[in-house]
Length: 291
Image 1 (tube, rainbow, N blue to C red):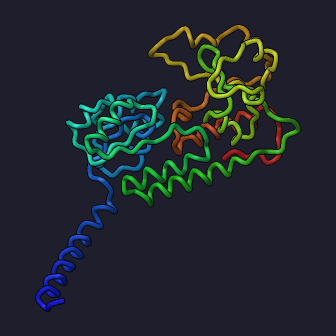
Image 2 (image 1 turned 90 degrees about the vertical axis):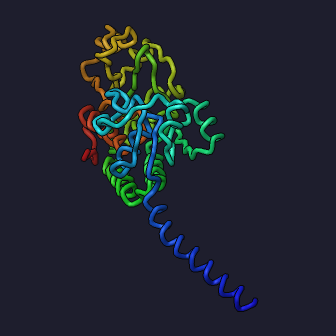
Image 3 (image 1 turned 180 degrees about the horizontal axis):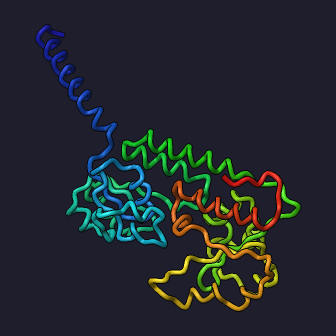
């Protein structure tokens, strides 16, 4: 290489090195403008984003029945998950759920926007990975690792007890829908040391569960839905059905904290703890400490 060419090459390398040095902190800090289009990504983003980094959350971010961290939404601008809203906001990163408006995701990707989709979590043990992923996307890896590790420690503290017999439970939702295998509720029940009657009988996902079977099986615990006082519905009347009132006096009827199982987040631990506390109040067991 000629001396002049070599000198030019060294100068170019130096310029690129300096540019990379200036750019590296920006990458570590994460995107400057983040927009969330889904109530589940809302909650993870609200927990992990730096001040001013999150520029918009979904219209459900403060829904008391779906958002455990509704109070964090504050005065953040809301969106309805429309591509037009994203284009107007000019975010660097869009986070959303796989079950959000698919047309929006497709349009934004065709236009060159960075869109990261999160699955709907159906297992307690998969939540920490989702927390860490959001942290990595937002440049908040250390904070996310702390939250995820704290959740894992809390779950480990709700160890399945040694009981004289299995403690059996059923989550009975609006219109007589039970939550069977493959649901976050079923996973939370397992973590709390409960046997899910619906899963035990082969029911999967969200499925109609005959009231007659509930009466016949007489579970130790019935998890009832969160009643929406602001939106009365005939579907909620199942919670006060005479058949439920006729269950044995020993049957506990409980509700988990609102929004604690609507999405995957560190707050899922609160649902597991509520279920474990109900288990402990139903049948004396060894090693059933609930922290």
